[in-house]
Image 1 (cartoon, rainbow, N blue to C red):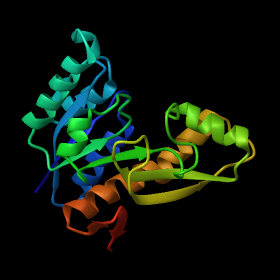
Image 2 (image 1 turned 180 degrees about the vertical axis):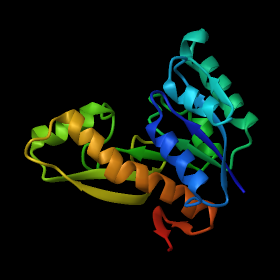
Image 3 (image 1 turned 30 degrees about the vertical axis):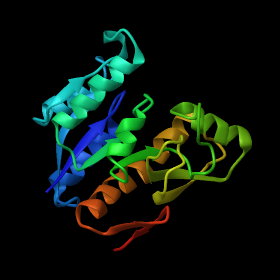
Image 4 (image 1 turned 45 degrees about the vertical axis):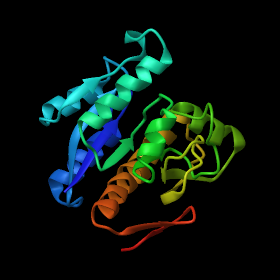
Length: 208
């Protein structure tokens, strides 16, 4: 059974999609061992509580400096003994020692088709605002492994979503979540949990 820790800063809709997929049996051989948030007010922690999942807040504001926060975050992660860490809207830089210690065991969901609209400063509604500003006709979401860069790790799955003429950032964000994020994140966890993912020289093969 793959032990999964989900790190999230906000509402936790991707967390909910993963919980629902596990409950429905479309994600097998996986369990959510814990949820970690940097934000004490994150609704994701309430979602975890409702489903009997341990939820912990590790806030940078509780520590004197970034190094202490990183140490506490890493200690909390290790306390759950995860096989896989899922970043589902976690708006905190991951410490290098965590990336090194969990190589190819941390995945992130990003609301665009990487390499478009990604990297430093591209998160939340800002991604969709930039996509609309550029006038793209197709956007989507990407699940990728996390490396030392920002949105630069090997890509697992992507799904395209049409941009409609009447879209604003909020309607586009919702459609990308519903038609892409909530589908490919559970699919990625299922594939990893069932040994269907191979990573070789920075390239990912996902078998059906």
